[in-house]
Amino acid sequence: MFKYGGNNKLKQRCRQRLCFKSKKASRISSSNRIKIKKKHHEREVYEPEESISHLQTVEPRQCYGPQCSRAAQYGSKYCSAQCGMRLATARIYQVLPQRIQEWSLATCVAEQQNR
View (cartoon, one colour):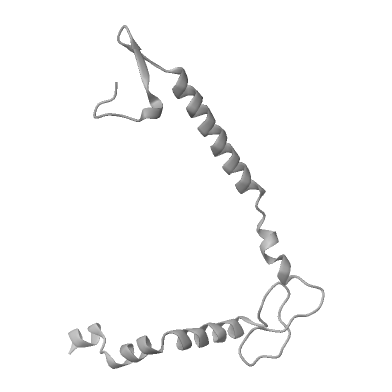
């Protein structure tokens, strides 16, 4: 017996003060193990190389950077890391203009404590 209740899947039978797992519980636990193995097997099948297969083409692709017309590097969307950073900063300024204005108007806590 379990103190303070217990898991219903792991019910046990007690005979002469010795607890044994019931047959039903062993069947349930074995089916759970099979499910876990299947999930683990699915994870092993996943190959990260498939996720970038659409980027690896024979023809040179155009860079996705803002106002950039150069060819992208093999296996990448951008011609350089700087071009990708420019696109990221442009998106930040487009999505969060109100926050940036609030940050520029508010004084820094560290500056207030140093005064």
